[in-house]
Amino acid sequence: MPKGRELVGLPVISQDRGEELGRVQDLLYDEKTGLLKALVLADGTWLQQPRVISFEELQGRGPKIFTVTGAGAIGNELPEGFRRWQEIKGLRLLNREGLELGLVEDLVVDLPSGRVRALEISTGLVNDLLEGRREIPLTGEVEWGAQEVIMG
Image (cartoon, rainbow, N blue to C red):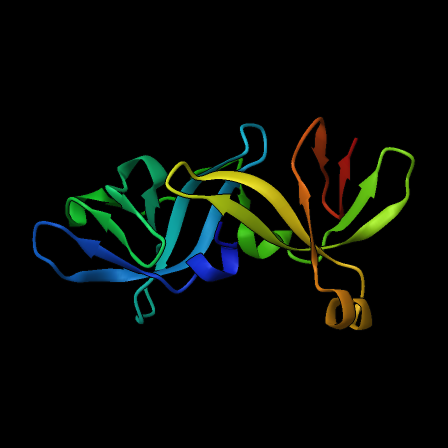
C-alpha cells in the first residue's frame, strides 16, 4: 500500500483530452471516516484559488497516476472539516495510557478505496535507520487533536 508521500507529486490526467491537469500537492483526509476525501493540485502557477478534486471524481486511482473524466472535475474550494496530509506529519502518537509511541510521519493508503489503513511512525532517527519505521494500524478509537493523535 502506498504512503501519502508516494501519492504527492503524482500526475492527474484528463481522460477526455489525455493531458496532465496538474500534480498532487496535498491530500485531504477525513479522520471520522478514515478516507481520503480530495486531492489538492499544484500546477506550477501562482493561482490564488486552490485546485481540488474530490476523491469520488477520480476514475483511475493510482498507484502511478490519477485520472478524471475532464477538467470539469476540478473545483476551486477546499472542503472544510478535513485534515491536510501536510498537517499530519509530526503529530505525536499516544496510546490511551499517555505513552508516546512516536511521531506520525505518514499515512498508509489503500488504493483504489482511499481508506487510510495505518500511520507510519518514527521513534527517532537512530531507530528509524536501525529498525525502520513502524506502521501502526488504524483500529479502534482514534482521537485527532491539534498536536497529538490518541489511539486506544
